Image (cartoon, rainbow, N blue to C red; front, side, top):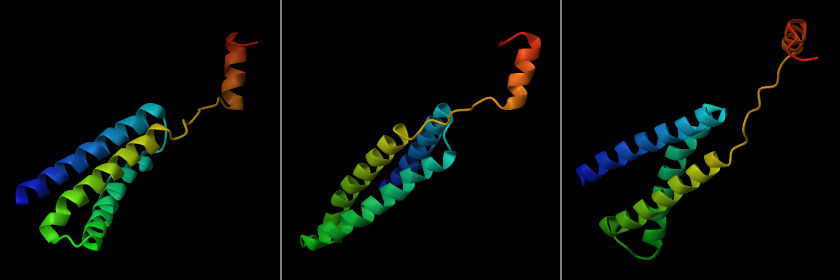
Length: 105
């Protein structure tokens, strides 16, 4: 059981890094990457509750919790993938500098 816990931590770290890379690539706020661990852990807790509602014991609830955690991780990836892209618009100073150099008319 200890090895699977360490594997979960490694997966959470890898997921967070992947989400952070996606946000950096898209130019969005890096805070979106926090959705990964939040939705994974909330999915696991929900999975334990659902497993308990169906009368499963603690060890039997674990696969249900992992399944719900994977659903949460997939949901976080989909949300970050569809997050709005930040557009960097030029300021007035940039427009003046470009028009002064003949870059734009």
